[in-house]
Image 1 (cartoon, rainbow, N blue to C red):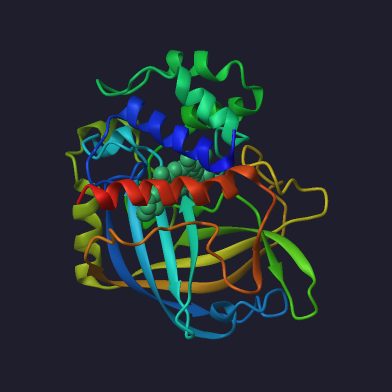
Image 2: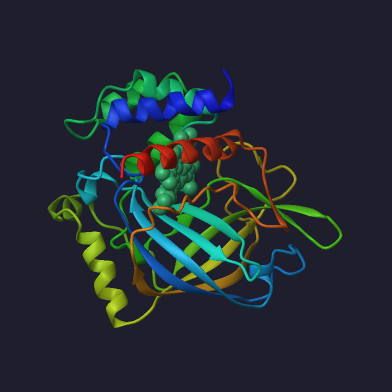
Length: 304
Ligand code: HEM
């Protein structure tokens, strides 16, 4: 099957499992958008020629979200939260970093992702049970890591206190063309805070949005941008695998989220939109997301 055909099938199946929600993103349907300022430390300049990562400031647009494709799911039912950042470059271009509060993804390839959706029962009536998920994942050993993670996984206490991971590897490309594999991590200014599942179920729908609105009314919400530096033996094509804990990390910038913005319907936070000095890795899920996000954008815009 052609890549874009498979992406159509994947989006059809998301709609079948989670319902078709007119005008909404086909994943991470409910969210909130903000304007931000990014200050690069300059410490990445030997690794990449990307303009926003040279010492200095740029403007950015940020969208926090709950992972569910169904915007009516309670905040607690979407423990994985998203933070999508679009940097506005001086030459008018844009470049994205899209993160989630999990360090790994559950499917290694677009085919496995689409196949898993094909056998999933409809979640429209409620949250899938762990037994149901376990049954689904048992045929895909590499997805077991995600299942263990789901068991441990707790939602952050606030959008402002989550740690957000790019999951996929990218390459930084330096002045002489040298390539270094990296993964991005956004770290909150304070401690990473998680919610106990019991506290989470008590929260009314939209409490994460109300919380971040309150915080920003009092002052900027701040994050630090780190990159994990990959070693030659670290997989760059497998989003189900984390790199070893002892890999060197470099702080390359700080993000100050300053004011609310209208919901960014027209923006597609395509993770493959990268500027000169950065390249996508060979990860097939990463490259598949380009088509999937385009199709979701076309469908939701045609419904408005
Ligand atoms: C087969 C793999 C995946 C598929 C098919 C997929 C699909 C989608 C779709 C259709 C959207 C909505 C796009 C739009 O309408 O603008 C979306 C949004 C999003 N996805 Fe994925 N996704 C995949 C993997 C991932 C992974 C691995 C991450 C981890 C970083 C991720 C993080 C996000 C986030 C944070 C958003 C919200 C972006 C926003 O605020 O607009 N996705 N995804």
